[in-house]
Amino acid sequence: MRVLIANRGEIALRLIRACHELGWEAVAVYSEVDAAQPYVFAADAAVLLGPATPQASYLNVPALLHAARTTGCQAVHPGYGFLAENAAFAQAVEEAGLLWIGPPPAVIELLGSKVEARRLASQVGVPVVPGTEPLVAETEARRFAREVGYPILLKAVGGGGGKGMRVVASDGELAEAFARAGAEGQAFFSDSRVYAEKLISRPRHVEVQILADRHGHVVHLGERECSLQRRHQKLLEEAPSPAVSPALREKLGAAAAAVARAASYVTAGTVEFLLAPDGSFYFLEVNTRLQVEHPVTEMVYGVDLAQWMMRLALGEELTLRQGDLVPRGHALECRVYAEDPENDFAPSPGTIEVYREPSGPGVRVDSGVEEGSVVPLDYDPILAKLIVSSESRTHTLMRLRRALREFVVLGVRTTLPLFQMLSFDPRFIAGEVDTQFLPEFLTKRRGNEPPVVVALAAALETTGIGVPAEPYAHTQELSSWRQAGRQRLHGRWGV
Image 1: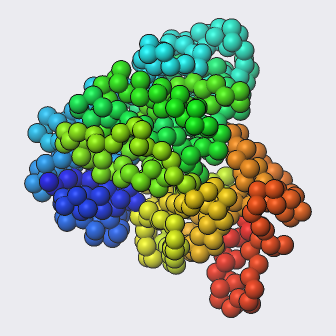
Image 2 (image 1 turned 60 degrees about the vertical axis):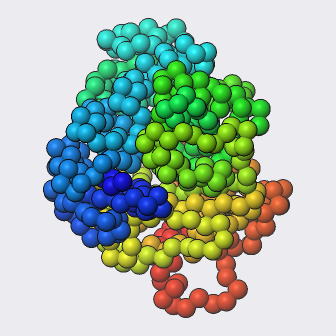
Image 3 (image 1 turned 90 degrees about the vertical axis):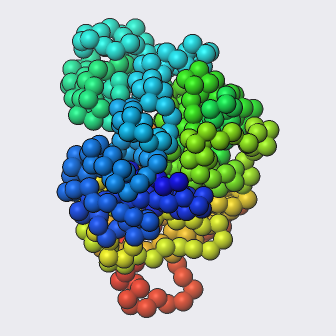
């Protein structure tokens, strides 16, 4: 089997490795700016798509299909982002006589509509957030808001990844939010329709991983906690969620499986939920692809989701049984973005001058860069994902701190210093997070609040995690070059 990987960066390299472990060949595609990226050299063959702009490269359907045909590929894997949830692309792949590694195009189209997905979930008895059908005019949104009360959430019908979403707290904000949500929907999903939902106060964002075959078998692999977000985009995830009991896990899993069966789902997917403070949950959406955060599930369930996605697309029967799928230990994932947390997460393009990954027991890095790699402005700025796991959440946090101290990226700003701070935050240590946690955390930091070492020590003592008087102190003096490097890496974000 020869597979075209219609993506770039760390996910392309992850999928190339999965292909090789199955004994398959992988073909990479790249834009002019990505010619020297590690994933290009890891593939068995590589095809230049065109200039750096996504429309001329990774969104260029004719070029992608031409690359598949000329290199003798039998299948296409879209990864995540770009065309991964594009039903028209999936259909074009199948019409070209190639295997689409993902759910059928009709399923992507069905679940890609947030309104249709909500309707399907409701039909199978899964609770949904109170909301509307697609709105024709702003006045309909205002009427809904007055019925359920502010705040409400305006969402693009074809949205995802935080695009086309606007929180509205009053009548005065509605007109601009409605226009902006519609404009983003048109720009990102070619669909300007907008619908409204009641905004659930301080929910957690949890998602359930599913696998389904063509023979009617569906299993879930527990939940991931994805509440640490900024602008509706995730930064840090973990599995299992600190807020989910075994009983609640079964309910969430059963709900996710019910939605998958009703949609005739095949391969890997994710059903997302909002978890309210009182323990009630609501269906949010279905992601018809492999998630960025899939490694945390792999670490606690011992299942290679990327390979299973490929095997299930080929028609293989699912041999995993629900009774055997129980979480073992804990895992955390940090998304290492080329962004500046000090400057509202502004992109930080440039050349990576120094790159040192952590290693050791329970540490995994899914990376798409190396020393000398160019970080362009044209694409999502994710550089790597740091995943750590251990037998307990407490020890996993300790391992995360150690791995973060070892992870060095110089030449561009990254989110690594932010994760170092989060790993010492009392609320995060206690697992007391929700979707408002990170914005509040950042607001406090920007208010120049001093580090509360005493409070940290008290919080850590209650969880059994020790903390030195200075979290990043070392027992031996650092050399001058190492001190300079760490100052450049951490900047003012050091604790």
